[in-house]
Length: 262
Image (cartoon, rainbow, N blue to C red):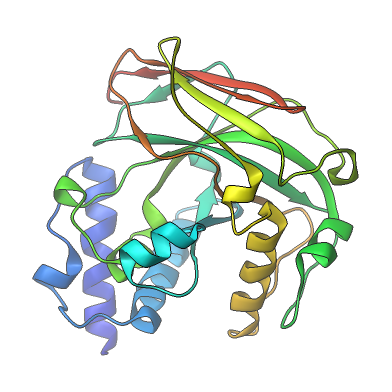
């Protein structure tokens, strides 16, 4: 794929995010046969654009981390994107409404040592994790009516929009992360629930997959990365004024309110 088309895809998706508007998926408008490799090339250009603008990467995030989603999307491995500093909202704060936000409860990993694949296992990830903490990710696909293929999502930085991290940090050895349960509520009503095992059997397995995927490009997980491992719950659509809460066994609570469009 030519550099011109990669840049066209990047510009198309960056404009949609900045202007807070839906667009038709890339595979309908720009490149119908967009491959995984090409989609990550577009994502990398998008990431570089944000770095050039002065933003900082907080860490990677994993998506499509359940076998059910693999079957639904016709894929055989997760995808990843990146969380930037401008996407962070304090626990208990206000998340500005963007396009059509959905929320997911996740367990985040604060990495204590570099993790370089290939061949990384979940046990190795746990040994190199400083802390785990709770989070709610706000995904907000730029695509109209959530109509996309998995390569569209990759190019769109895995639908990343905002993230709220909790205040409770625990050593991973203190918890059986596959058994950690979470409830996700909107306006006091439980909308979904799940456990760590929903993420490839154990959240650390998702981080291991990430390390091995990055190794294909000669990249690695870095000390200090704060990584979203994948959703314990389904993605719940929210609206302006909604109060969102996720409660995690042993990891406390994460809350925020959906505010007006910024």
